[in-house]
Image (cartoon, rainbow, N blue to C red):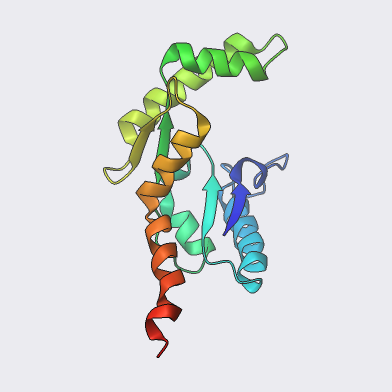
Length: 154
């Protein structure tokens, strides 16, 4: 599998003509990167991007067809503030907190019904990762794939 951090796929200024929200360049870049990974045998993609859960069709198109499992990691306001405080050491902490809270409310209100929500408050990253793997079913599928050759041997 491969990992793509979606925040880097639309880093262009000014926005391309006819693509003010940069979704076109995001899709084109994701398609190019995924194409390179697919040639190397990758069959699974972990795509991280805050608003990607609102447009899973973009990922499907960029990958040439795919089954998308959307996961929204959630945190309460105190946890979000602590995490942002650890990353933002400049004067923009409050702006990030306000923007983050607004986006969290937006995602909570508009995320499609099939989006899996995983709470992260007070949890270790490894436990959150296990929940994500459980949601995807990748561990079970991997076990079946690893056992398949043994089941076929005489």
